[in-house]
Structure formats: structure tokens, C-alpha cells
Length: 402
Ligand code: ATP
Ligand code: MG
Image (cartoon, rainbow, N blue to C red; front, top):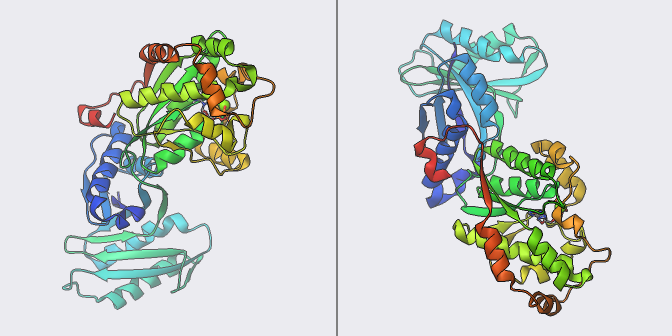
């Protein structure tokens, strides 16, 4: 096998100053976590890059696939190695470029010689290797400025290293580097996308779902579980807290005039989520709300709902158009699950004419008719918690990441 290691570039992390060591440590842990089934990896970290040693060809292919989903990686490259012999180097350069033989590309060679005792100096090496590659692959065209493929040859003390392919990473920041938040996860299109965007910014998520049987069916709960599972493919566990909401919704229906019941329902949801947040020591709440999308998402509505807490509410989709949200949902693979038919606890109790400018004082006044604090505490206390991914055994060393 010609492959020696995978080189990982951090990109955005490089600019993070004093938090950098923490970010690098997180990234290394997250890489280990999302590749746990591939066996133990030997990972070496440097100031602005990281190296994973490769044992065999399958491991290289598996890592190339996995690393593309790990947040905090800007790009990465498989690196090949050989002895410090010019014939071996020519052969390796040809092997590394074989993957590009089918199409036309512009190309150049860059040589770095750390071992100054190596008989050929950098320019001579560049010419020899460039000529070998160009004569082997006639589809390649030499171009010094911004070529599509830049082959890097490094003559180090121990061996010669060659790489050509630069694979785009997922960008963003390692999950966990920006604390933990609670995602309000419905079965719709928006909230999984909101969760994904926050994970990309390094936020670790617990999800909360409100479920109102018999008005909502087991199928709709299954769907939400599937969405929670799908969010784990970005390299972190997701805990799903399911809260039975029927009793509270029926009480709201009794206490609050129909055109304000939506606002009251959202306010109760937020109060319940805030209790879960406090219980698990999370910092913020994430929703899939987008300004103006429905009656409960006008600025007046959001303000009336938001009034029940001072906890920061992160709404990554607030300025997104629905079509852009759908695009992301398709890219990250949650769309197909999200469009499975289901009843949402809110849709079922949705009044025909919800107020788009609800008055906080009025809603609060009707809410005083029952002791919602007691109902909410009970619902939150009796919640069911599921941990995803389900079967993968999480080793002890990852326990603190849960
Ligand atoms: P989504 O596609 O996420 O369902 P939506 O456009 O249908 O969004 P709403 O149903 O008004 O919008 O919900 C707004 C936000 O409130 C959702 O994005 C989600 O964060 C939260 N939410 C709605 N219903 C529930 C629920 N049953 N459980 C938990 N959170 C919910
Ligand atoms: Mg919804």
C-alpha cells in the first residue's frame, strides 16, 4: 500500500487563539468517536494540522468517507510515502496521479526539501517528477498559477511524502466546543435543519419533542425518533426527551380563547423545554422558527412566546426562505423523513384564525385559570429519554461527551 497517513487541515480553528488547544482536542475526540468501529486510530496533532496513520487501503477509503461529515475539518488529503530514492519517487508520483487519468486537469509539482542532504535540490526534483507525471498522463497540462491539481512532494528526514488530492471537509467547529443546547424537534422540515446548523457551529444537542396521544400517533413519534437518529451522523450522540403534552393542551383548550390558544401552547412548550434545559445544564434553546412563516412566527407572536423565559433562544433559520431550508434538508438527508405524513400536536389544536398579534397580558391572564406550573413539572418529570445511536457501545472515555 502506498498510503501512509491522512493530513487534516483545521481551517477556521487556526484563527481561534487561546481556545485552539481545546478545539483541537475536541476535534480529535470527535474523529475517534465517529470512527470508533474502525479500531483505534493513531492520531498526531500539530499546530495547524493533524495526521491519522493508515494501516491499509480499506481504512483509507473508510476514513475518506467518514471525515467528510466531521465538523471542524476544513479539508484533508491522503498522503503517500516511499523511500528516499529517485526511482521510487517517480513511481509513487505516477501512482498518486493515477486517479486523475480520465479527465483533463491543469497541474503542477511543489517540492519541499527538509533533508538538505538529499542529492537533488528542489528545482531539479520538481522538473524530474513533473516530467515523469506529464509524460505518463497526457491529459494533464502544466500550469504554474492556480492549477487544479497541486502535487506536493516533501523530502523529510525519514521518508518522502507525496499528496495531490484535497478533499473538502464539512467546515464549522467541532461539536462540543460551543456548549450544549436543547433543540425543539418537531416532525417537520425546519427543526432538524436548525439542529444541523447549530451542530455545525460546535453546539452539542439534546432534543425535546412534545407528543399528544391519541391526537398524534405512534407513527409520528417514530418519525421524530428517526430524525433524532439522523442528526447523530454528524458525529455526536443525541438524547431525545419525549414529553406527553395531551393533558396540558386539553387544559389550554379549556382556559384560553381559541384565537390565543396557539400562543399559549407555544408558551407552555417553551416553559417545559426550559425546565429540561435547566435539568441537563444546557445553555440555550434552539428552534426551527423562521420569521413570518406561519401565524406563530410573526415578530409579535415570537415576542409573546419568548416572554416566558430569559434563556437565549437560537433561531438559525429566522431569515431563511422555505426553499433554502428544503435545500439544506435534502443535502443533509433529513428531507425524506420530514415529509413522511404525520400529525403534529400543534396542527391538531390549531385554531382556524390564530392571532398574528397576540397580547402577552391577555394570554397570561387566561393562563392564570389553571396551575400550569404543576402540570408542566409533572410532564417534564415523567418524560421518556432515548439515546441515539442506540446500539453502538459508547466507550468509557466518551462518557463525558454524552
Ligand atoms: P418544523 O418544520 O420544524 O415543524 P414549522 O414551520 O412546522 O417547523 P411550527 O410547527 O410552527 O413550524 O414550529 C416552530 C418550531 O417549534 C419548530 O421548528 C420546532 O422547533 C418547535 N416545535 C413545533 N412543534 C413541536 C413539537 N411537537 N415538539 C417540539 N418542538 C416543536
Ligand atoms: Mg411543525
